[in-house]
Image 1: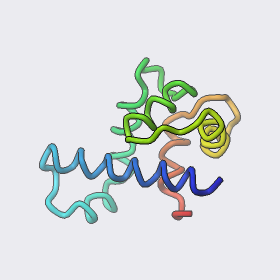
Image 2: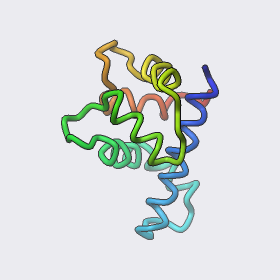
Image 3: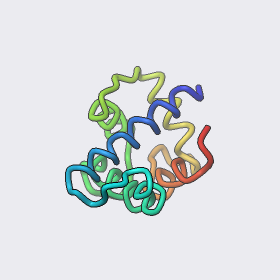
Amino acid sequence: MLHIIRQFKYRCLVFCAHLVFAQCVCTDVSMHLTCNSAALMRRIFSKFDKDGNGTLDRKELQNATRLLGDHFSDEDIGILMEILDKDHSNTIDMEEFIQAFMNKRR
């Protein structure tokens, strides 16, 4: 189960690095990610939140993993939802998404 969240976190961080380089925000990506990781996670979340309602549902999470280059199974998406959805609302809000990345790496 932990490999799923690790893989998703890794892909999101790679996506962050691409955003940073694409917009020439900072030449030292590791420093930028450390200093502004919550801001970057907000930007990534917004890209994944296709309907703009402030939450990610299963379909948006599945699409996010595909955008990141992975094809998680329905079972893996269920596990990822279970890990990230702390309030059991069947959606992931921005705070839950950011907290997953701000906590110590697993």
